[in-house]
Amino acid sequence: MTTTQKVFVAGLGLFCLISVGFGAYLEDKSSDRTIEPPTVIVPPPRPRPQHPLRQLIQTVQPGAPIRYRNLTLFPLVRRAAPGNHGIRTMDEALSHGWITISEHRNASIGELLVRNDSNHVIFLMAGEILKGGKQNRIIKQDVLLSAHSDFIAIPVYCGEKERWDTDHATFKSGKTVAEPGLRRMAAGSESQDAIWQKIDGRMSETEVASPTQNYQALYENRKTRRELDACVARFRHLCGRRTVGLVAVTGHRIIGCDLFSDPELLSRLWDKICRSYAVNTLGHDEHQKRRHDDIDARDIRHFLNNVFSSRLTHQNTPGSGEATRISGSVQGHALTWRSDVVHAALFPGITILRKEMHRPELYR
Image 1: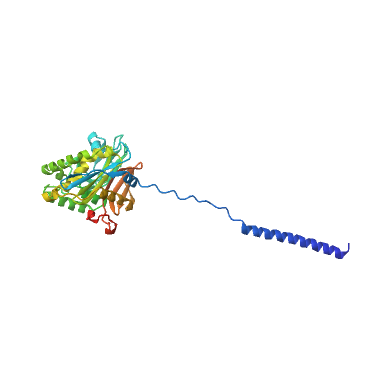
Image 2: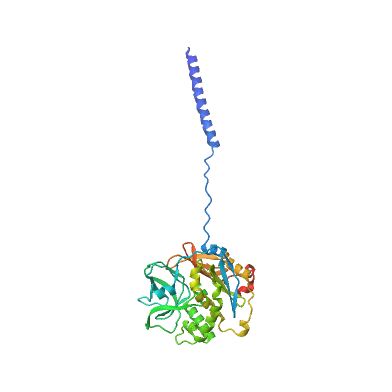
């Protein structure tokens, strides 16, 4: 083979190698363009569990109301079989010596110390009145005490403006719950001065005198106690085995609602809660006493459903469970434990707009 032929063959081979390599390169580039990255399937977010209060409201229905003077109560009956959590009340705990309530070492108007020495879970309801100590107190917030808890500080209001002494070192139950107006103010964290003004107004309206401006005196006055007892007796049979709450109406206004998951706990507190609402019947004239209410079960349902459009905000609680503040079309508070409602207090919200209301006159 001549030199020229050798050069030709070598050049041809080099050309073939270059062609094959370039073709492979183009194929690789073409593959890069056509092969798509693997598809990553992201599962949809898990829906947030509904708040226990909203779940509970879906399972209750208003029962037939009972009227007495200017007050009407609608029982709230649970369709599903309710449970019993074995929670005990403050009155039971104090009568059996299960809990200890005392002043701070440096006593404060706004706080008391509470310890649970028993095997029971104890519920202290917002609005319950404690007698004794340096002055009577009104519990400001629902508190759930776990078994054998250490001392915890609970928030309270003063219910006896003109006393601060050590004549009554221990506390006992007043066996009463403050009226809904005061409980609504507590739910909104109103000032102590505002609470005192409300108490002064109620004492003046009912003509009950107390040298220490003791709110408990309103419930212990002979005349008012007789009227309140008659009112409570009228409503007592409304509390049935599936009754988990009540809505109170005075005149043409809804004034409040108390709701529980456990009917047994409600039954133990029923008389105290009824007495709280019965205070609104005091001081009304005969015309108001005979006035018929114009609110029906449909209106009660609408009021309860307003919870679904209201804002639920986590709130600190000194005891067990989870506390929620409710604001908007309905305001109030709820205490939940083990995914159930220990207690919820609901009041008509001050932010309701006329266009959002089913019947505006109910909330005036």
